[in-house]
Length: 234
Image (tube, rainbow, N blue to C red; front, side, top):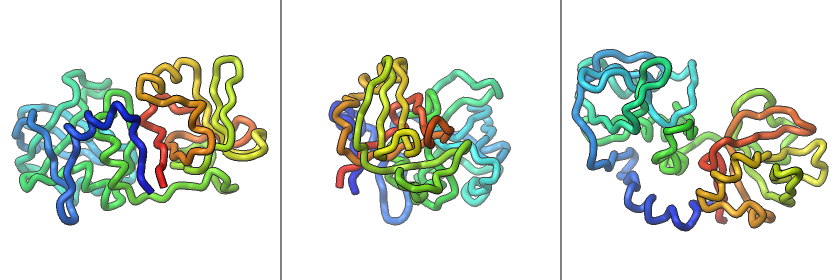
C-alpha cells in the first residue's frame, strides 16, 4: 500500500524528505545546532545545554514508553532542529533530535515500535515521514473491537460522504448508527481544504485515521488536523 499526500505537498515533501539508509534513519536538515544532553525525562523530554528543554516533536505521549533511554544518555552530543522558539506550558520547545551518527531519534523510536506518530499542533512537520516507518497495526473500520475513549489508528474504505448542517461525515458501514465514522467539523474543513483534501472525493477511497475514539451512535473520530488522515493508494 502507498500512502497519499495531497498533490501540492509533493514538492515540499521532496525538499524536506527524511532519507532512509539501511535499517536506520538519517536526519536531513540543514538548519540545526549541535548540543549536549544534560538530562532525560521519559517519555520524550530532553534538557540540552544550549537549547534548554525540548520535547520530541510528532510523537504521541505515552507514559509507558522507555525507548528513549536506549538511544541517548546524559553527555551525548546531538543535533537539534527546533520547530518553534515558543515553549509549551511546561517550558519545552518542540524539536527533532539526531544522534552523532546521523540517526533520527523520532524515526528510530517509531521504526522500533517504541513510539507512535501524532501531529500535535505545531508539530506536523515531517510527521508523514514518521508514518512511513510505523509498525503499529491499524484496526479495521468494520471491526467490532475498536476501542472507545482511547487513541486508535483505524483504516477502511469510505462508502459514503455526507454533509449535515455544515459537518462532514465519512461513513464506513451501512449503519451509521452503529458503524465507525469520521466527523469533520466546519472549522476543521477549512484546514483540510488548505491541505489539498476534497472531502466528497474520498468516497470509495481507502483511508487511515488516527485520533481519540469516542461514542456518537457508533465509534467516531473527529480529527482536528488533516495530517491525522491519510489516503491509501493500493
